[in-house]
Image (cartoon, rainbow, N blue to C red):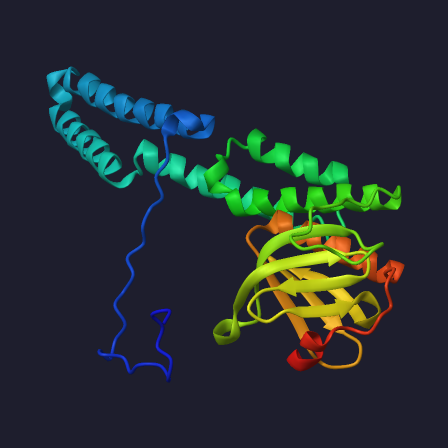
Length: 277
């Protein structure tokens, strides 16, 4: 069980939803120059108000009424500013949100096929904006996976096909090029095992073994951490969920290369695959 309601949604217990109060993000004011400059501006403003009130109090007696009014107004202004203006940590939090939005906007504008230089520039851009690793961990993982995919495609174009140690003996002439632990299937039918990409086959080794020749594969693509494999002769789609984006990126690039190359073994798939369709 995954703790979710399996048979429909529950009815609300109240007629009105509980209001969510806005929460101001906090950050270390020392991280951002803009937040420090704003803190100095507020300090100067408060200090100037107090100084103005003091000067007016020391003015001649014939303007005592005006002096009193301005002094009270200056004090009131200082109090209001102190109560309503955000604290330095809140101003730093707002600056952090602005920088995160700027970085994510730049990430969203690189397109579907960014160059190697563009990806590295964006990784460096996160450091330039003063963003910490844990604040943009998902975005950096996507960028590093894309970098690995671009570098692997370049290596494959040079004829440098990687190799991996297969857990079981392979037929003569067959070579394992990729191996990783995966979850195969969706939801209740999930199976855990290992995905092997060899010269002639895509193999899943788990509770139920699946073997497919590259000639039977129509398309390979990556969907987040999943390697998605479409078959030519059926509507069946095989989905293999990897532990990381980097693994999924490497597996998808190698599988796509083997599909385009046509594989080296055109034998019929084994009976365990036929039984799984």
